[in-house]
Length: 436
Ligand code: UGA
Image 1 (cartoon, rainbow, N blue to C red):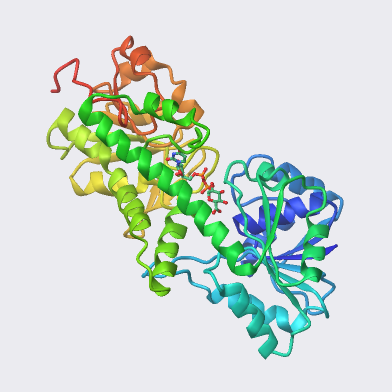
Image 2 (image 1 turned 90 degrees about the vertical axis):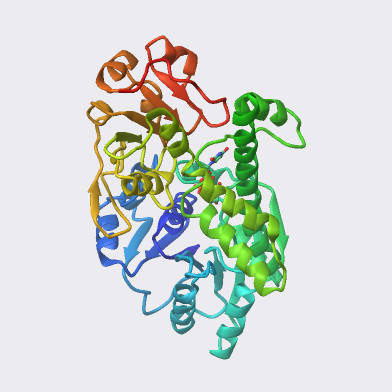
């Protein structure tokens, strides 16, 4: 099929490349010329395992091309909308980019083509897009909602082997086109109306976020009553009604999806006249969880002014260079506002921009970052930070204290190296040596 992928951001690029691999002829369109130039030259502007290799293969076979504008004449059978829906100040999704694309497509798509919405959009948006196209005289176009469920760092696998595919359609013709577009992917298919498809996406992310905030609250109670949340989560997860995933306590969820989508769903509910109390609490708990290590650091070090704290990991999770809503940035700002010196290190993130718009460079070598530090916080569980040379770490740090924000280190093993490790919900750890 001839497929146009509008928006070469994370979702659009990964999905476009995967559709090309499945045998379709794909044109990726993005208004960011610099990005398009990079992609034409086989350079991927994001870090996603396997994506660069796959892009090179498809460019060599001329199965994918990149353009900074919609083609003037359309050969597309499907145009997939995958542009961003960033949050507005009130938490609602900003749909301006989506509607701009719809208006552009309305002028160029051939008769009977399908407009498939992949951007995460509030319930009712796909129907509004259909009405908008009708008002522009394009009631011949098919419209569908096809939510995406890919995870950064595992995105290729999530496109080729998803847990499910959801088609939100109102007619058979759209379903037929979508089945053809996804042929070659083995997964259960749910065919439903667009509003339900839109809700499946929000409800899935909101539920996963709820699991995380729930286990984080259990962790905070565990700290107070002397229980170990990692064992509690294991014990809970063996019940198939609960399941083991998304029960890792830590510094809360980050990234481009959960924070944005939870707030958007609170907003969608509010606009529909419903107070989504539970989800509001999930969002609040997540915000609070981010600065949890500061309390422990204060217990350990007293006043943090003048202290040097190493933050291990800046990406919001391992396997990505995405720093959107990363706990590391909140911790960096919070430490600085207490007068501490915060050092950042990450294996793939080179720099970040703080809330004042200043570019902060990120160190690559963890041992340099740990040299002379009063304490460290493990923010992102990159595998390289779980296998450090611990005797070197103990020698490098001024005080060998690590707050393990991801419960990924073995406190007993590290104790042998003279390193005190305190995790989330694993009980408060007293200091073994006095702080100077
Ligand atoms: C998430 C969903 O998992 C995808 O299904 C969805 O398609 C995507 O959002 C989206 O809406 O586009 P992603 O943001 O890439 O994917 O990241 P996840 O791997 O789900 O992790 C999200 C956050 O939760 C991370 O900050 C992670 O550290 C945190 N997390 C996850 C925990 O704190 N504990 C856990 O047990 C699991």
